[in-house]
Image 1 (spheres, rainbow, N blue to C red):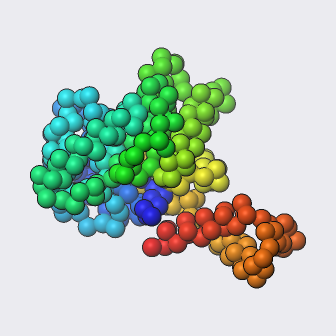
Image 2: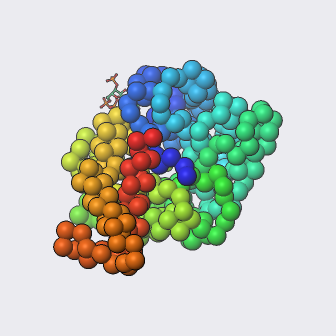
Length: 294
Ligand code: COA
Ligand code: MG
């Protein structure tokens, strides 16, 4: 099983200062961004600094790179620059669906071959909802063989632009209904495909309480991790996506209760009826917990 990655911190690849800072912030993964956070005039600089980081950085975090979209003028140079340095993964913005993941996989395979890297070693995390077509294709992910696919994440900004919306927020300041539906579809598609479900970023990065509430809900709903844009978000996200001691103890009690009564389909723990879905949930919590400790 792939290690569960709870926090993915975006770092603009053209910022030497932020790159330097990023190494020991405790993020499970860093995403060196070559796309929207880097202006066209700085794309070459971003590539150069991303390569230096991949070569020299001392960090426990996985190192991912967000390249430019497949139909952009930058993609060939992005891949040719970073793939030889074997990043842990590539984040792909604005794919129209699994067909674009197949295209990227083939391009990665050719480069892995060329640079004598282990075939299939570089994983892919698409931002799977940035176009209307992409949203309509979410259901294809579980039916497409994509061994490099680590998970699915989603975004609301580019989608709003693509569908001609004035805003992606409702009157209460939360995502409007359309984007909440898209978020749920991303979660379900990832689960149906047996891969990680990564919630989108919380853009108000000074609002720690708001992030804690959002991340807590996302974990409870089944998301395994979340995107981050600022160092202060990383510890909150890591904690929110790690089962608590109480959840682990409860899971152990459920598993023990079934072990103590091997013939039973339903048992009780603390006066509550527990059956198969609870057992699976308990096993899931323990495996998540173990993944975060490994
Ligand atoms: N990665 C690494 N370091 C970061 C960082 C990031 N994503 N965001 C901020 N920092 C650093 C700052 O450089 C600053 O360092 P210092 O204390 O040594 O001066 C420190 O963390 C505190 O930053 P702060 O002053 O609170 O924020 P800022 O105004 O410097 O930056 C943003 C705010 C939003 C511009 C910045 O967080 C950022 O660039 N985020 C990522 C943007 C991105 O990649 N977007 C694309 C995906 S949507
Ligand atoms: Mg974008």
